[in-house]
Image (tube, rainbow, N blue to C red; front, side, top):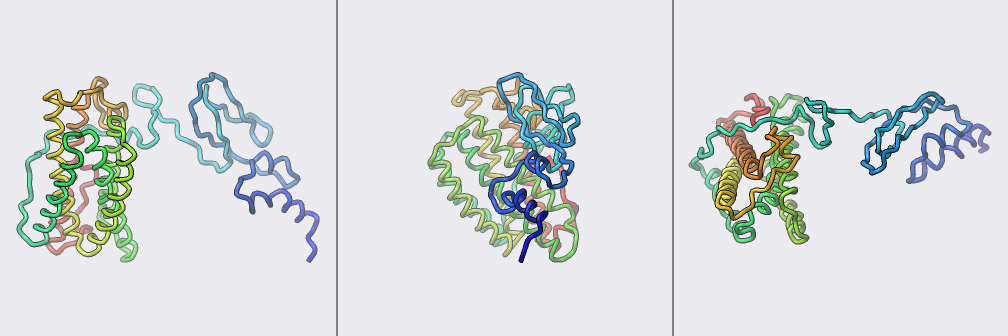
Length: 324
């Protein structure tokens, strides 16, 4: 079969893009004899020491977008442009992992001593499962509460993601709404991940601790996934007890800070912005707000388990979205 002259030119021009792993730049396409298309530009900011202004010309020869001062630009033609976000005081918002409207002031007045007394067999099983996990944790970390918090948050962010995913899939299968529980559970997972991002600034993991995270997360994810499929009420109850243990751990962390055994260093910048802490906040302030978060997660998961125990489904009770 013979190929037309125009088709051959198209294959010569676009062939490398279609059959090669390396992408063809917009300028390469524009310089070819294939009819040019108007490509919009997107820039991903990468900090640079120089103070040069970089310009990129538009594909039609007109004025292009001006790059930010002192930044190297990466040009794309997909049309997705980065948001320019500023704080209330007009300064640049530097976090891409969360936005200003996702920040909040933690409710420190929440009751930290609330406890669900296990009465049924599943509740007792969940309670003693959590208690049995505490012994090896105490043995491994001992009084290293900064490292302990960082490592445990890598596991604590799993239940919300797994629960949200399974409720999401159930909603799709049954063609029904979830009562907001998908968002509530994913919100919990994201909040726990932000705890990890914060403690990463306080304690740096060693290579064997990173290896431990891979192993523990792999086992816990699959175990919790199966547990949630078999019995959501058991899964949520177990997370409720896990959060009660987290409250206890952060209380011990505060005691070590108050006794001077752990240095009360300035709070990481990411924590100050996420929890709207004062500029002079310290590690103690961070532990206080994180402990309050764990108390809220305790309430949400015990509440979710109670809904199932009453023979109802989560969608029948409005989810506590934004419960901080």
